[in-house]
Amino acid sequence: MTVVIQMSPESLDQFFSKVQQQQYVQHLLGRVGLTRRRATCFVRLWAYLQLKYADTPEPLQQLTPVDTWVDCTCREAAALFYAESERGSERSAGMMLDKLMALGLIQKQFDGNTIAIAIPQPPELYQAKSKPATVIADQFDPRCDAIPVANLLASRYNWMNNSVTAVPYRITQLLRGWAEGYSRGMRVLRRSDNLNPVGFCLLYPTTRDSEIHFFGPPSKGLHLSGIADKDPFTLATPGDDTCRAVFIRSWNIEPNYADQSLLLLEDAQTTLQAMQQDFPNLCDLHTLIIHRDYEPLAKALGFQKTGLDNQAAVYWMYLALDRFLAIDMEDLPHSVIA
Image (cartoon, rainbow, N blue to C red; front, side, top):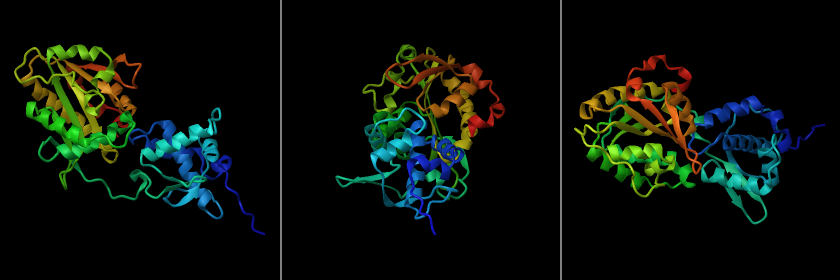
């Protein structure tokens, strides 16, 4: 006699272990807007839908697309999401489902009675893919790179705007405007085969009167994300001997190329040395930590927190330029540059 197993949220860990779940969660943390909590909820939901759809659930070896609609009530979602914490409400679970849908991780439909969910195109991180192309560090080209870099940055800032439609057009205009003013500090990681940028670093020299903002609320420095209407930082012009500070205004690398961080770090050192010819009194590096994934790297480099903002989950960090230039990047722990 065949025993039909009824899949339930409470039995998930029997078919997809905690260790397996955490492996997926750890990789997912590279996606923008996906906190550890959201990633955990998504992985548990994904596994549950895959198991529930199977006629006879068996232990999972890997997660695969769920390309058909599978019923999932808010009660089931709550049991999945809050299994090891004080039980959250079904309303909270519904809000989490909406967030996962807004992030493009799931598809959801509701006919007035039943919620159905599908995951036909799981995150590209888990798709079978060829080995990433080799990359080179190169100068930002406002004619060719502005739009692809703007799209890369917009995808990194969507979560801050509670939107999946951050406007790349606005970022494109900012990038091209800054390139007209001073392009030396704008660097890209570029694929060697098709020349597409897969990483971007913006070293932005600021005027003396802009320095006060490095000691104020970090949220005031979020101009590139579209949160601030007016840019509080003025770009210094070459030859300004009162310019002392560089704002590392952007540091973004596509997850598939995260192991190429060392190349961009070494390039940043070379670029900053060249910038010292334009601004002989440069001595300070300031940056905003917006994505916590980059915090271990910043700390390994020696950056220190200089302030917090109660209104946003961002903060300023500082490092003396001379200290940064003296770092042997090859000695950095592999875990923070890969």
